[in-house]
Image 1 (cartoon, rainbow, N blue to C red):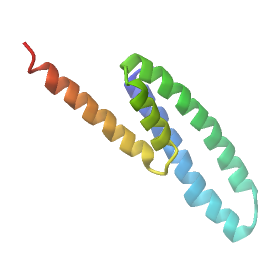
Image 2 (image 1 turned 30 degrees about the horizontal axis):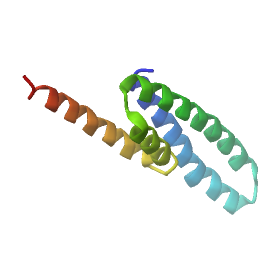
Image 3 (image 1 turned 45 degrees about the vertical axis):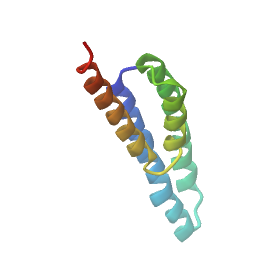
Image 4 (image 1 turned 30 degrees about the vertical axis):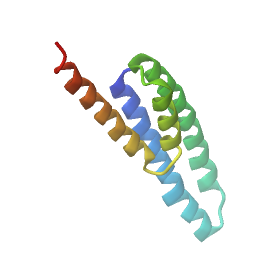
Length: 104
């Protein structure tokens, strides 16, 4: 799993989470219809399982370690959390590239 592909999966999963919380759930509250939450919840659930699988594959390839897996799982469970994990990945990459330039 490449980093770019993982980030695309994280983006799509994160957007499905926001769709569920900010569109489907309010629609259910307003109309009383259950189908918006059923459909959006099912899609989000499937995408979340895909996200976890991709996270594990990416974590192994990128050597994120247990911290990366835990952060990715916890932040992936929160609205907008995927953005925070994306930032953590950027900081980690910047630190790795900065520290490799200082070694002899």
